[in-house]
Length: 595
Ligand SMILES: Cc1cc2nc3c(=O)[nH]c(=O)nc-3n(C[C@H](O)[C@H](O)[C@H](O)COP(=O)(O)OP(=O)(O)OC[C@H]3O[C@@H](n4cnc5c(N)ncnc54)[C@H](O)[C@@H]3O)c2cc1C
Image (cartoon, rainbow, N blue to C red):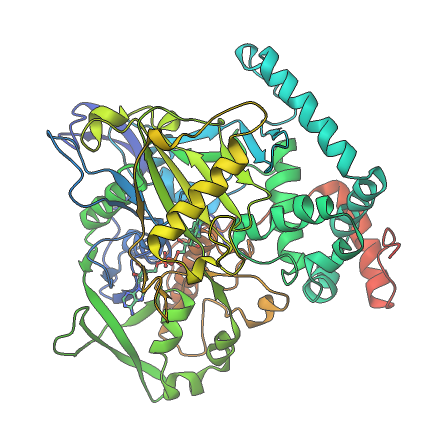
């Protein structure tokens, strides 16, 4: 356990920063004395930038090496080339929309410490709460609106309209008629089993059990499997319910996100369950962050590919790098090295000598990734759909989405972006690339880029244009964008440079710790072993904190350690968990586990 980082806070005058002259902001005093030590951070995504900030604040000289010409990794937003006219910015594109659940604690702490003009709490003040999730059903079935407010907060007066009420009643009745009561009761019992399981059982029995088996989805109705199996796994984190670790799904999605989120326990202050930024990610967060890091002295070497982390005599001796598009290789050196690349790239840079120095690096070869990529649709009319995220439960490609303009209250979409005709961006994500679609009958991986877009649109319409409503029309669609990281679509060997770590059973055992057996080599990234244990921006941030703490320990530093928040542990469950610990040691099932 680490101690809280307690940088002193002071008022600073933001003179001329981003046009907000005269605004005051509070952020930690960052004028740390130099340690005289240099750290090379390999990768400029959330984990790399988080590590850079913590190190720079503690007096380290930091250089970040990043493959792309821009920072932010999978979290960044990007311009759609050639779309901004008349002084407007280009239309905003992204790898996939960003959601900052209220149970995140580590990342929000970093957001508070990134100054933003006019914001008392830095970039954190750019978060906006969503109040509903829409579980959109296909083939004419009524959609389920799920209130994402804490149960203690009643709906606002204007939110309850007659048609909203009618939809609620219809969807609950529809669900009730298809989800048998005994199945719902069985699921509730399974949640209770997980809630009261001790840590040792979670890390052993439940880590080895798939979510599908844990909730006995095979024996239940199709509705049960769709809603409580696939809908909570594939659609949210790209892992198939049939292989997903029960420990990961149970702890993070069912408990931290939904259960404790709805009860308002363990949250980031009075945060909503669902939060998004008030502008494209790079504008609201990544650009101010890199500016802040530069002000702390962090140097960025962009467009640079890390090719190999060199190891001699059990120590990292340097890193072989080259310009992304080729060019002469060179070796860069530092006192310490933090690898902050995603696992599928990082492990390619670990040569035989480095792997021999720490066996946990070779275990990373067993970690798996899968495709999860976004498509943005630019629309002529504002199309909020719901005040939060959309989960198209019956879509074969596990499509999810969000109408973004409604949350971008510091922007006027048509005045600020594109050629003035687009009024909204419906940003969606395809999480299932291996099942046939409804339009062409092909898997996403087999489709051309254009076919993916048309198929995605068709699945959205199937989910949203029903129950007498027409939410999306072809005439309203102006254009689309899909991340260029996916290449070769429609050809024999499509590639995705930015897949996502998935969580099959046993993943926990192959996750490496942030500190390695190599004294000057540390790991950050969403695949590193963290308490949150889910490939997210929160996990990336927590891993960076752990990497920096390990580095400080190695250096014998007296600097404050980075604070690490762990997932909420309900005190009411602790006595039951203690009973379960005894039962687990005796080889008995959990008290509530009736099979
Ligand atoms: C479609 C999608 C939607 C998501 N939505 C959410 C969400 O809503 N909320 C959430 O919390 N998480 C979300 N995630 C997960 C989240 O994006 C990641 O877990 C997180 O961004 C990982 O950060 P990272 O720093 O570990 O890796 P990355 O973001 O991948 O950053 C690593 C960086 O290393 C660079 N790099 C790679 N190879 C090299 C090399 N050889 N040399 C130099 N640099 C290199 C990359 O270019 C990149 O900039 C989503 C993921 C996807 C795919």
